[in-house]
Image (cartoon, rainbow, N blue to C red; front, side):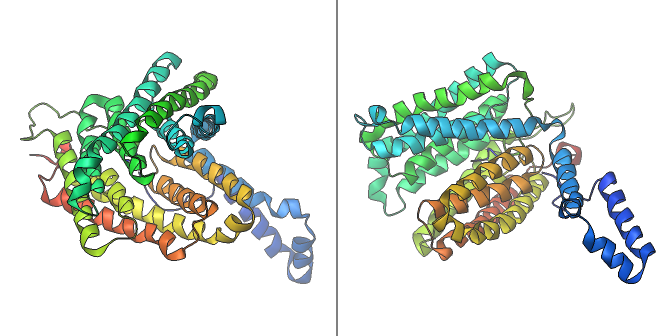
Length: 406
């Protein structure tokens, strides 16, 4: 989600062994000369011809995720989503729930993003945090349906205005540490999914059941992963570093971050009212999660989010034929991309954004959304949201990194 939620976007170079193997192959071809060299090159077994790309890929994985700990978390994310979705789709669970069809979506989404935001070391602390994060998502969804009767009379974008409060929570609650940042993100995402699934006040029961299922679906995989998984801080949910002695800010940085995200989101809502954007919530989400603890950090995060989306959206669109004829393959690709998302999120925000853009496109296509113009809107909505987030960071109480302050 949000954020939740960054380093160089340059593609990684091959590892030492890969470069050496590549150099040896070139040397052998040059030394052989003429037709003999070509015969040697083309007579090599197919398996050997794929060794160098595979070695390069493995080396890239090791640089992105040393020790495979983030890959384990990625597997946990996929497991939590699948388990919660399966429990939410059970007939015995949905038959007495208003709009039971959306229960699986809510439960799976709450469980997924709670697992993304959780970063505790022990199983007990992780279980507690996951429960709190799922509850926070439920609170966000409940706040949306509670405000819906009041905001529906404002106009077409009235319900969307609730997301502005969630955007503020994403920034402001970072003052309470990683758990606070995760809770703020979950509140926003709860509102987002309530908006996307058209929940109404009669669906409060469904929200409560979804929270229970999500807590179960996210806690069980964490208990099974145990000490094999090492938590890391997420760039999208990182808190503001403590100020050194002698430095002071007029406004708490977390308050400023919340105001910046909320202001940018409000502008998106206004633009949607005027121009009827294709999917304005994508722009609101981008604006919310690019805001960082300094103006330079926000600019860097905007750049990485745009670069990742520029790569992920075309890759997803290229899979549209598969989504129609082989949906199981597409869902498998989405699961693999979620693992890449978990690997990149801590310090490669560009990789994470690219992976999630791919996931969004292919899963929408697998669910029957095949409009290229609609799916492509993910790209330019991200550009709008990123630009507005950067503008808010530059114009509304600009924050400077501690090392830049005088």
